[in-house]
Picture 1 (cartoon, rainbow, N blue to C red):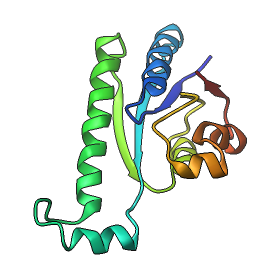
Picture 2 (picture 1 turned 45 degrees about the vertical axis):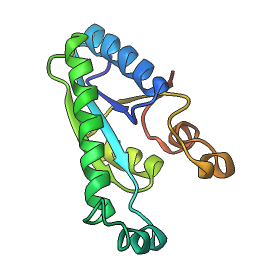
Picture 3 (picture 1 turned 180 degrees about the vertical axis):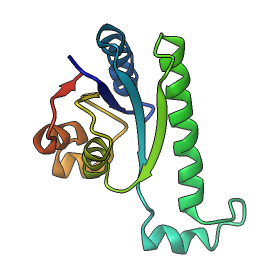
Length: 145
């Protein structure tokens, strides 16, 4: 039924539930499982604050990319331990929903399995959740867990 399943993963409990469901579906369909962690570029305000932070030198994007890599690798390990031995992990920068959609198109994923609630931000309360945006923009089916 499905050949390539994408699971956006942000480390939240909802994302972990979605990951576990995606692993099960991948096993039933013999599908490739990809885990995507998206991080946002920091703002100019954050950039100015980083110049006065002596304890954490370096660009915030580097720190955020490093953290995203840890989150994605953790999710890949969880997926493999649950039976998706070929699971792959990816990280991308950008607005979460649009980045997920772009990744799904570029990698020809035919299903996105996403948690209904992630770590989120104030923006999600103003503009709608990432899962809601993904369901509205995706070209493929989206399973919201």
